[in-house]
Image (cartoon, rainbow over all chains, first blue to last red; front, side, top):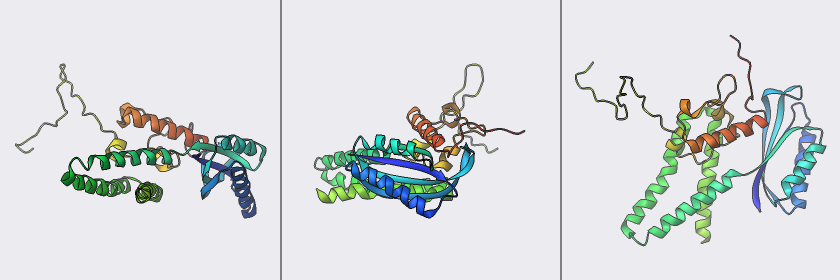
Length: 168
Length: 91
């Protein structure tokens, strides 16, 4: 099971009921293949950077899900058949990969703790404070709308490792 | 000018008298950003010029790894229509 992200673009003037049914169809395909939806994000109507199928704006839906290797293929087949979908893209979620890396890093820090017990606490303390400064720096540079997005992701990546720690 | 002038650390003298520019630091490394999100249109737009072309490493100062990640993110964003492939420049 891998975490994937899929984004579809519908016509901007699409009705709410159709959006619901599109999400439901995708949900069905994912479930049929033994997967699970983690998160559905509606970006709403956005302007295109270029003309896309004679249109200038579209309704974006972004879905993160856990699925087997065959799911993306099934989704693509569905997307191709569906005339309401202007564009689509499914990618392996990078967030997951990054989280796995950070967990590995934290594990290696924990392993080094017994060797230098007194220093270990200091190492942990700095590791805890670092993400906060990171966020600030991002917040300073990133424009307002991008802020929420980035901040949300960093929070996610922070919370997940801590969950795993409690499991252990 | 003050009497005290400290020479910038990385500013070396070129043999032919030209100033060697200080090497820029990769801003992604600086901020410890692990991956560049293709959904972050605002960020990606900063690394694309007004023609829609991806700005080179030489100009932005990104490290190889992050430039690669950035390029991938921009190309993905282009597929979704978030970032332009090309853009007309009127002047």
